[in-house]
Length: 309
Image 1: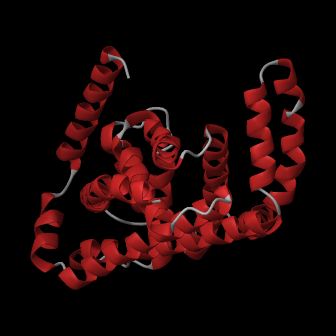
Image 2 (image 1 turned 60 degrees about the vertical axis):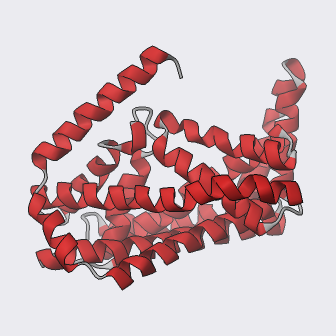
Image 3 (image 1 turned 120 degrees about the horizontal axis):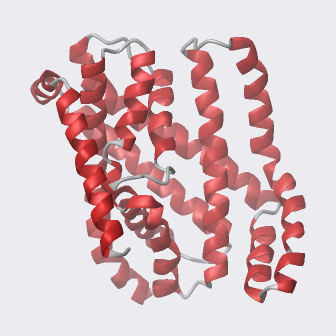
């Protein structure tokens, strides 16, 4: 990233941080520090870590290569840390980089698996989000009653839908470059039959488990406030935050943009503005801490494990 762009992103991050600090209710943080259950926070961390293991299994299935789960787990830790910290989703580039550096995986294979994983993530996230909207009683239940089954059908039949679309890409690279053709072939190969079905089922498991970790953590933050929290409210609130991470204005560490999604969703679900901003900021900082705890040791372990393999 060029110096001017980095300066602009840093300024945007500082402005967003200033807005957060001026709007949040600091008593929420004080109460959390006094009353939070350490065992439940640790349980949240362990549950959150389990999603990394599930992602490692999904990468192995999509790549179709005999890579060890521990090695892929460390790559997931570093990749997630980079995604959480770097602006504009530039952290995505670390995934093909580490696969090439430590396992000599071809770029087209790693990029196609990354693309398919993100498609599967969005389908799983969207499905759970729609179920969450219906569960918390948002307006438009009749529309959701039709949208949820339709979205779930797209999720489970997406392997066949995408398998039909990918061949349409092949005429393009013949006129441009062989790299695009190789990428298209990798997409078709990785999104076949059992591999695609298993990837989608794992994505559902990943997000359901991730939301459970989020619920355990959010419960400790909202318990002193007397806010009636449940699993599906967390799904709706954190889905809004997760979706902001794909925005082109995603700041350093996602500061501001991540909080905006949470704040807007929880205000609509009856939480006060100051409390919503404070819980959003506190939740986001703890998640960043989780990713740092997992990411930094992985930076040490992955070169050693890569050499062994």
